[in-house]
Image 1 (cartoon, rainbow, N blue to C red):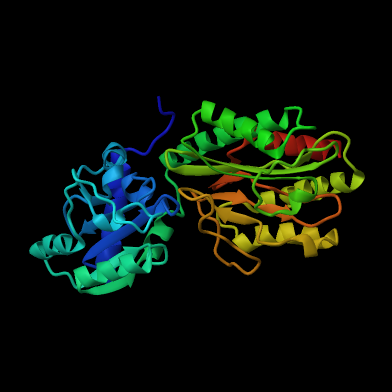
Image 2 (image 1 turned 90 degrees about the vertical axis):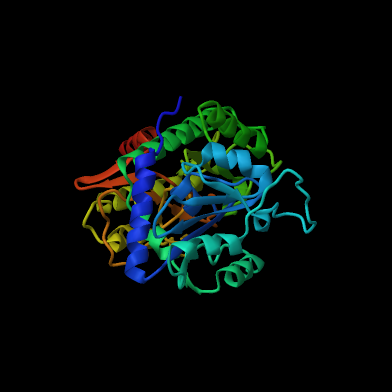
Length: 394
């Protein structure tokens, strides 16, 4: 039984919002591209997430949206999509092979036929597209040849709509976070010394699946010297006594992704390692009060980076310490020290407070929050308690 999900009415409101933007921009139709990796926009508008193949959704000024997929994924699309009109396109076949694959039972439509349908209902002078930077050039050429109209990059329409989350979206993120935290804590509490990084990652991933993860989007892992690999994958390296453990577990639930990363070390670790952990946790504490509606985002970034400056560690600070979350693990906003935009109620953000390349090891804190009027609500209550206990004891 699903703990949280996005109801049909919310998808209908999303389509209405897109159509409002279409009218404001003089756009006659709207195409949303997606594939297994760049899934977020397509999932947001249709709930469909392709496997192996490409996918899309085509929206006119009126009528039901059309979900587009390839033959192998047809039943998945029909199972997942909130829209009943699902059609097959040969342009979306398996992305990993150059061969022409024969699907004898498939009944295809074409971009040309879809454009003709739209023209029967009204003029088609401008097609808005979300995903121009994601799709292959050959697919874009096929769309241009078939629609024979102006193509406008409208990715910002969806980026803007996705910045503020509904309570249903927040509930999905909370469940993703619960699962991620359960997996991470199981790994963190295990006896990892003498085990491989892949063994350790497997503990976290296995528990996450058991707890209901729709997908493990990634597990970033590095121990000891390998903790300096900013986004390294788990390898066959043996975890040794005193090793820093840099692990980020990103879990998806109903299309929403939450990432859990507690910085910790195993066994008898050095004072240099303890200092890295302490600076990161204190930097998080400095930034936390600025996660509040109406506060300029740059204040959070500056608070974190000023702490690193005070500790003489700025050279190990490799990127901004905060980004948005939702249907993607990292999405807008992604502020820096000059971002004047303010936090808004309903935004969901993830700290990404990191130090890489120090003698004592490298690590970061990734903790998700919901922005409210009176402050930020953590998506990871046990993680927050861990940090508060550390601050009291150190």
